[in-house]
Length: 120
Image (cartoon, rainbow, N blue to C red; front, side, top):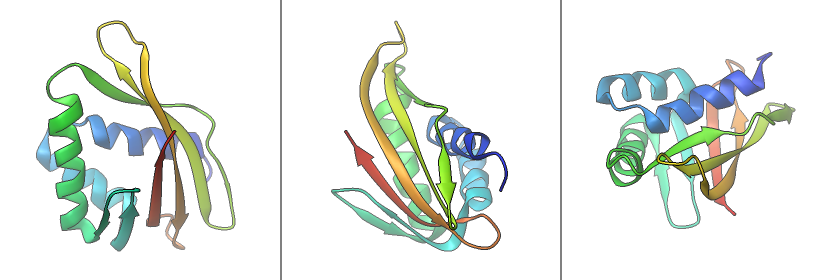
């Protein structure tokens, strides 16, 4: 993988995607089939659980039109890992509501194997 900021942007776009089938496609393009996603409050495994996780976040935060997510273009990585920051912002004025970062390990194909999400 050569452009980690592009990778991070595609990942964040998945969380903002309104179309269920396009979200599912993005999960397939970003995550290994047996991938794990961890937050302080939950743990999900595999594409089906990831689809539910991303859809739930979309329905709660993005669909009502109050918030959306954006990537901070600071992705970096080494040894099959990548990290980057993101923000949840208010759509009305662009102000940042919360920040966080994801740390991921990738397989040989550049697909996410583990995704650890932190909210600052």
